[in-house]
Amino acid sequence: MSEQRVVVVTGASRGIGRAIAVQMAAPDTHVIVNYNSSPEAANETVSLARGRGGAATAMGFDVADPEAVKVAFDQIVETHGRIDVLVNNAGIAKDNLLALMKPAEWDVVMATNLKGAFLCSQAVVRPMMRRRFGRIVNVTSVVAATGNPGQCNYSAAKAGIIGLTKSLAREIVSRKITVNAVAPGYIETDMTAALPAKAREALLAQIPAGRPGAPEEVAAAVAFLASDAAGYITGQVIHVNGGMFMA
Ligand code: NAP
Picture (cartoon, rainbow, N blue to C red):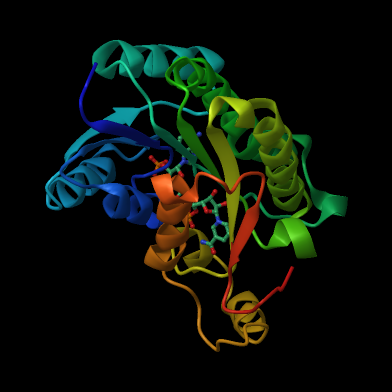
């Protein structure tokens, strides 16, 4: 078994996932940088993680594809013998008003954002139970709590993530595995850059901190929940949103 802590971050080629992968990188850690369609960007994340003195490997698979997820996690366990941390970060948005939303727009968001977290969590639970240690951190969103027009699919998937987090936390806490969620507010990434200027202004106006968040500010909360120090915290949702919503 590898002596290094093994951390898997899904959707780590860009944005929040990249910041998480880099933040978690350390000399005693091997970070697996998952991506779906951006291998070059994933390789940049790998370089940044290695720059912090740790090992890192890019691994392409679609989190919504059960067979691809199984093959990938089997390979990680075979190579390293352990998975210490899983961060379910991969996510997409396909915004539309409900009246206009196509079933395909609903399905693809559910598949990536919710089923992906289910599949990857299922893949790590047994290896973590065998070692009586594990940390699962799921990336949800402020809109799971507040709702957002145009995001019925996205907010439903992100609210589903919270239910998954709490139920799985109860199932496996006795094996010393914690399951928590981090709910970012408005964070500057490719995802939010795609919003129309008016929608961005409206979001900014709702943030008491008066500015959008940085991916590194989300990564800091994820890294804490993934740390040994957070062993008594499970089933929780930590909001990282500059005061945009207070639970
Ligand atoms: P982003 O910049 O658009 O990056 C999305 C990441 O997810 C990319 O690395 C992408 O990989 C990956 N991904 C997408 N579909 C995938 C799939 N089927 N399988 C594997 N990886 C996949 O988004 P972001 O803003 O960093 O968001 C990261 C997470 O935070 C998401 O879950 C998002 O919902 C959540 N979030 C973001 C905000 C925000 O304000 N930005 C707020 C709340 C929550 P490829 O590039 O390889 O396709």
